[in-house]
Image (cartoon, rainbow, N blue to C red; front, top):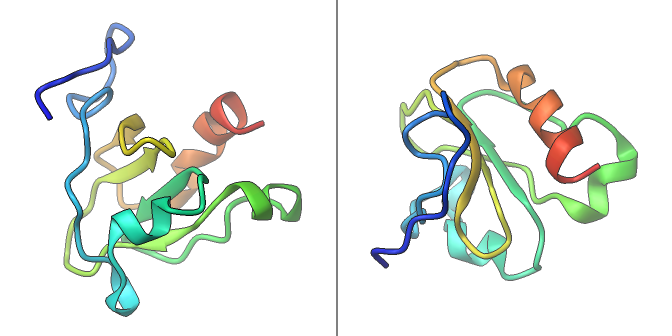
Amino acid sequence: MGVRHPAPRGAHRLTGTRVPDVALAGGGRLHEALCGGRFVPIASGEYEGAGADRKGRLAVERWAGDRRTVLLVRPGGYVAWAAGATDAGVIDAPLSAHVG
């Protein structure tokens, strides 16, 4: 678990790190959401995934607690992108870059 992928300069400190199996809203767990081989955006508020064309490639989730960090988790469980924001819409540009 000590593996860390390189992150671009200026990236959030969580980018490139492995995410533990955290609780998600609705009683689910992150590793369950990753089982489908999809990217998992996690935010504190409601988020639809920015388009129906991505629905099959995303498993959109919300934090179970009061975390404010927005994450885009790769299918392998590593953070592709992160931001310390409460607005889930900030993830639209990273989704375009990583998922298409």
